[in-house]
Length: 364
Length: 270
Ligand SMILES: Nc1ncnc2c1ncn2[C@@H]1O[C@H](COP(=O)(O)OP(=O)(O)OP(=O)(O)O)[C@@H](O)[C@H]1O
Ligand SMILES: [Mg+2]
Image (cartoon, rainbow over all chains, first blue to last red; front, side):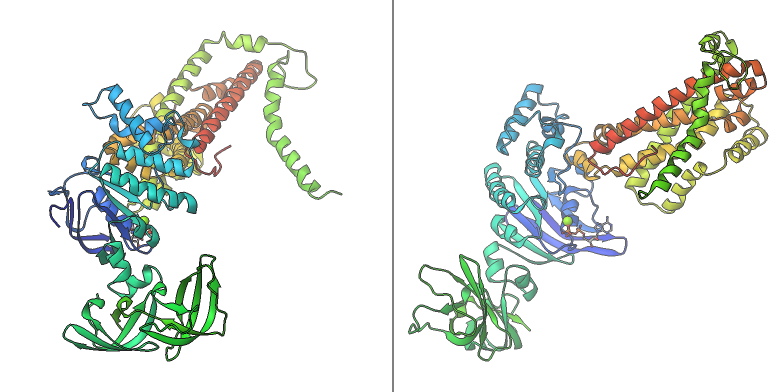
């Protein structure tokens, strides 16, 4: 990356004996929306707090704007944070909260500060709420106040620790798009911590998937979804069918014999974790498989037959579990419910079409 | 018979036993007679008027106020340190240290009094004064202050201070601008409780006063003179009312603090 804003270089963190961060290295660009995604306890918050300066690193370096942050305390770092609990000051009103960080700014007159607070509140959709006491705010409003309070200081980096987890589903979805729009508008680097894979996919430019203190994969959402580097990443992000296979590598191609699908030859690119030799696992997302329903005489380039063992109807979609001839486990297939398209029933025989380019191959 | 009648009778009997003696104070304080006995002799306020004319009593009141105010301030300051440390930090022997702070709560006061007397006079060679009383009272009031303030500090979201630091404050600034305003109700409550305890305390004060008695010590001295007893009753009435008012105000502040930090009320001393 050219001119990264943040550089993490072999960051390690121990809490007493517990190894919370195990050598995190990555670069985050200016104006990037970067997400840290991982299961509970994998060290996301710890990493974020390390960048904010609330935790010292045990070894390794954190650089922001080319400057080593080792001796820079949290209050002097060019970062601001939106806390998971929002940490709205209960004894101040909304304007007092948003203006808190401006109080020390000697270069601004009282009027300028007031104007900045009003502008920040407008930006988060809380215009006119300045006099509201903190305890009279809803969850979504608290979240916006926390956001305005951080953004009003125009930090180089905004750190967000699961800022949407306390909101209900509808509010969360609304804030996801709003947050993304806001980030594009202000052009500040956002680092978002989340354990919600959908949220990370929707909002981020790039996502670092973390497991147990390590980055398992760092990639753009589409790459992460289509070409997960390991089975673990694939399972964490979305749903994937796994079929056992045997693989023979020759040069840039991999010849596979997949249980239930048959023989196919792929390019080594479809093995993001490296081409395995011998026992392998072939992964397929449910939406890359389809049940041929309307036109039984259609002949897709790759198809197999199986038996429907489960049907789950979602309104817009139908999820089928189909036991393919020759596979040990049924595969999940998602189908759009187009007008006039029939929904199969349990016990029906199904013709399943698949696309070799959608396959991802992992070592077994 | 309705369920729980037995328990209700017990509760009423218990309350009567507890408060009847206190209720007798104002009755005899307004009784026109030097003998503390029924039947009552008629209504008078002369014992209260007489209070105004006793010079030694005024001195005792001044001494007690000095001791109680100083004790309240010292105990609360120590309480703030201990409560903040216990709510924020992990350190070796934390449980043991906090336990030791709380021990004077359950030690018999007479033991504390004698021990302090021996230490101050024999070992340190100091002479007794109001300051030695302050020392003893601070020892027994600090646990109360710690208990009240711990509730205030524990009720605070610890990310509040971090948020203030994140927004540019130093650790000190964050404490004064965020934490302190939020625990102020707890501080007021701790000040009032310590003040009340010190004002009423007799045993330790009895051991540690020099030539200047505190109010309870002075009162005890007056009990030797039967003709003084109605005046003591009048003074006792005033003290009881004052204590009740102070404790009520303290509880009001404690509850307000709990509400302000949005924490759950886990019960105070009242
Ligand atoms: N102050 C601390 N002392 C000791 N261990 C800690 C401390 N803070 C975090 N940990 C441990 O470090 C690990 C990572 O914690 P962290 O809070 O970073 O997880 P997380 O990925 O943010 O999880 P979550 O999604 O649940 O918030 C956890 O196992 C946690 O128990
Ligand atoms: Mg976390």
